[in-house]
Picture (cartoon, rainbow, N blue to C red):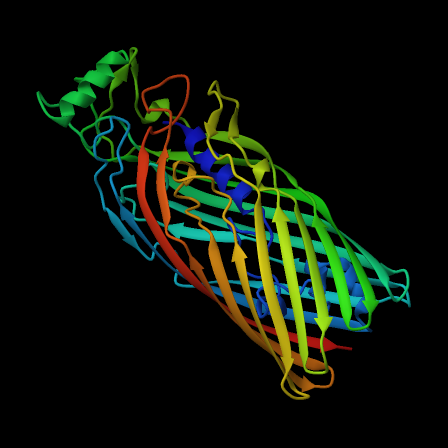
Amino acid sequence: MNPKQLSLIIALALGAASMNAGASGYRFGSQSVSAQGTAESNGAEAADASTIFANPAGLSRLEGRQFMGGVTALVPHSTFQDSGSTRFTRTPVGGKTSQDDYAPEVVAAPSLYYSQKIDDRWTAGVGVFVPYGTKLDYDWNWSGRYALTNIKLEAVTINPSVSFKVNEQHAFGFGIDAEYMKARLGQGVDVPGSVIAAQASGSGAVLARQIAALGGNPALLATAGDAHGSVEGKDWGYGFNLGYMYSPTESTRFGIAYRSSIKHELKGGAIWDFSGVTSSPVVNGVLQSASHRANSAARVDLRTPETLSINAFHQFDEKWAGMADVTWSRTSRMENIDIQFVGTTEGDETIRQQWKNTVRVSLGGNYKLNEAVTLRAGIAHDDAPIRSDALRHAALPDADRMQLSFGANWKLTPNSSLDMAYSYLDFKDANGNYSNNCNPLATTCTGNGETTRGTWKTHMQLLGLAYNVKF
């Protein structure tokens, strides 16, 4: 085992997470509390400065200077039940076969937006938001520890934007995306024999025969404990977003928004801890010990998926408004990921991912209860990018989900208001049967050779609160 395995998973995490709030994967939740209240169906509404994220052309509808500051809290509940995970010898991996609440009790992220009308045609603004993130802490002795023990992914996007109003019917928008991402993760290392001692019969004999077949000495086996590795990586990447808004009447709008792919060169380093391993096997005359696994730097080049959204808004009367959004994500960009190692002779490692493109569909509505309160609601269906159980990894046990949202806007004064939102997301059961195709004794590739087999069950709630002010 060497740093390629962990660096590979960090690449998977960052690549998977590079989708906006209209997509699945490592989607954090919502980049706008007002949008959350309608299940992100209000891309053509352009009611506040958060239109910078949904469609920058919507800035043309905003007067004066406007500010929105909000926070969204995600409250997940997740469980895992093992159904036969194995190590590279295809013998039971041992450890805890169930995991409850390996996701944190709550994760919160802020969003900030500011817009300023320059003249009758030009409006500018800037948004700062968290497009994705995750934090998973599995038990270090769970049955999938050789795939992952823990992961923390954080990202922040700074999005300056500008819109140009051609006339009352047509407006265009453009923005620059500066994206910072950072990830930290851990993984168990299956040192051959760390759990199964060499014995004359039984599963130990299976391991001994496999080690001997690979040129190793089965008499020299680690007698206690797994090794463990941790890695951290970070990078800045840059892209752009475009928007167009068509308003045939004052009460009807249609929008198209595009966010580009962003290229990242993720760089970091791996640290390895073999203190829990008392001895290791000899393979081809080389002692497979802690000294053989030196800390090293790593790099992965990846390109995140682009997204295209089409949305509509219609004000039926002074009280009722309806809206809809369809967002397509080109997640098929995230195929197999190759890890490069700087300053070492280690070859690349590949993780099988082979994602499919996804579509998210949402419908929503507003109801003006009185002059001070507007109620919101929405429903959405979101595809997961994972093609099959055999490609579902512990770092992303994702599945198709349904979202039901409720929200409200409460005017405090003529120029200030509060947005509140609540969402419930129900995920389909996510069955996993993912095998690493490289065993820990191989010299031409890196991996634990494990199969993580089981079922993840997840549901989550989102709570949002934002303050808006015009001046």
